[in-house]
Length: 291
Image 1 (cartoon, rainbow, N blue to C red):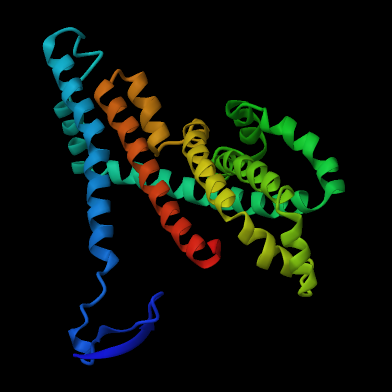
Image 2 (tube, rainbow, N blue to C red):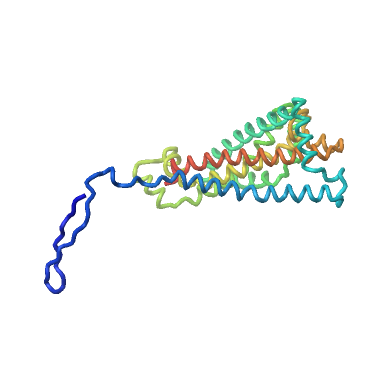
């Protein structure tokens, strides 16, 4: 290690020599602390905190179910719900219900989200198109999900098409409404800057306007995914013989309260898993376009 001498003049005109150490050996400099351990600690803390309420609810559930305050045919214990799930799994039925419902949700979500993004881009960027479409789409958005069931059954039958179509309808409106509104409120100065660089039409949309509304797009996709799971149950009323919606209705009709609880828990878990997948997409998009 060597020193650098700096000559400085004080207010009294006296010369002073300041010495600052300079590291000659680069290896002697400590490496920068990586952010990954801190990120892992943050993830671990979030996981532990997120598990507190479910554990408390399970303990409370077990306590109430075994205390006799509620009859067993109204409130099964967590162990009986687990046993019902194991029974369906061993019979090879549980996987089929979960797989077909997940497939319907993902396909319907994809179709509804893509159509919603395209129409939102058209409506959000044109005042005349917005005035043309907005009133009709606003009225259709107010139609309850169950109201579509008989109509889709009449026109599309009772196969997979009406179920996927109903889920797509549920996913369409959150994406369309949120993204169209966000595009209408993109900073005009940012748009003018993009045009000054020669962008217009699809190039302006993809390079300037859509990146500006990435948080709104992610929020709309999360809302659409939640709506897709909600519309799944209504969709599986259309003559389904497999699926979590069918299992939910079948359990209610046969008085299997343990399977009813199991289905609700599975719907919650699957919804959380798919929402986490959208969160991964959010981090990618924000890293790609957020800055």
